[in-house]
Length: 281
Image 1: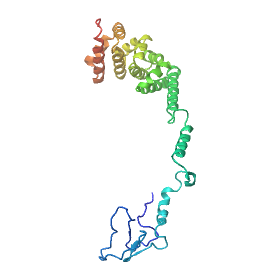
Image 2: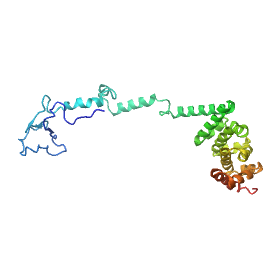
Image 3: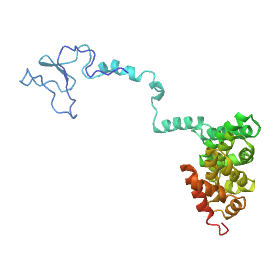
Image 4: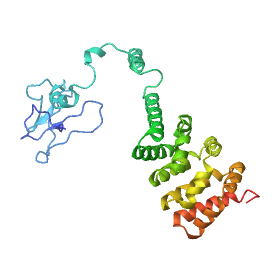
């Protein structure tokens, strides 16, 4: 970006120049070169002179007061930006308000920032991932489960995933999937269970027993995610606490709390803590 020189380009850079303040303006008396201690004769009252070579003079080749000599340096900053000035001639505040209303009317509906379009795109992505988790190849199902897990980390996506039918294929992957699919699907169910309605629907659709089996016989990562999911399902839900107990969930959780990895111990202990609220446990 070009720099603006503070010295008008029409004046020679070899001369010491001080712009004189206009009458009534701030800035005090004009500066005087150190080599000239005496005060020059009083200049004319138009306030447009400059002090050059020991006397007050009008800037060479420019009217004293029009300020046009500064325009060439400002041009690179203003050229091509905004509407032509001719389009604003005679425009008052009401006209500018009308212009702003015209701009806002160009946006779609009442959503000038496009949030509705972004949300529609997200819902389409959720639908696609649910379909892939249901009907894709083994690798596609694993990737779809991982994608749903990531999206479910945002609270606003948890209900849409369930409404798109995402609980059924995720539970199926926990029950019958490959080791990689099981870990990803269990993680997705863990996040989804943070929603109270999903918490009840996962249990209603048969998700508790597969998670208990995974906590007992899965890989290290799958056990960790299963213990976390059981913890979330047990929080403040007497029905789920009873269902986990009936599905045999206490034994694998105790085993993880005693001899699992640090994360497994943490999540299994939290699950057991929640289950302890059930008098049957």
